[in-house]
Image (cartoon, rainbow, N blue to C red; front, side):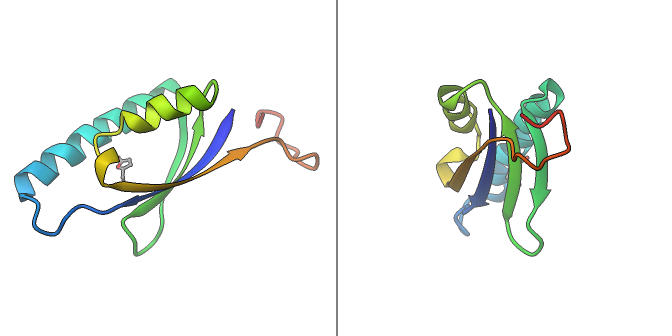
Length: 96
Ligand SMILES: O=C(O)C[C@H]1C=CC(=O)O1
């Protein structure tokens, strides 16, 4: 199942910079591992914001929940999630 997920990061301005860098490094490794597995299909920065638009390909809602809860930045994120299904006019056979 495909999900459109908007993630907004709200790290506190007074967070220790070394701690913030360590969390961001873990987040990057976690995200890139999921991208290599084909679970995190797309990630785009929203220009000018500390937000991204991502497309995740998860087995079901429970799998999506597990993936999102595992994000190292999760405690400082706001999420908007939209489950996607194939559009009848789509010419992209791979998009289920
Ligand atoms: O920077 C972000 O948008 C937050 C987060 C999501 C993946 C990643 O590497 O960082």
